[in-house]
Amino acid sequence: MATQRCDGCDRRVRIGGGIGDFWSFSNDGPTQGMDLELADGAEFFLCFDCIERLPDDRDATAADVEALPRHDADE
Image (cartoon, rainbow, N blue to C red):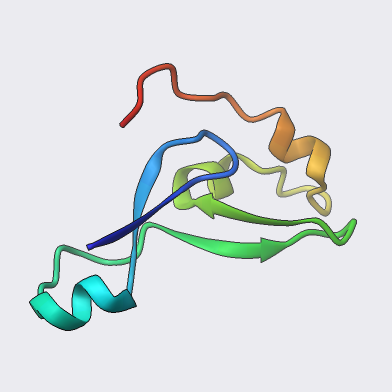
């Protein structure tokens, strides 16, 4: 299983594909985040929880990602 840190909350989340899935043929669940390009051109990998926290009444920007709460513990 491959993981990547969310640029919003800093939590490690599962990402699909990668060499780890190839060799183990495991299916530990769906991908838990995705890469996004925001309105201001900034690019981030965000978990689905952080994506849900972005504003939906306007285009999200890097400032919105920086305002997301971070996790205290290393998960």
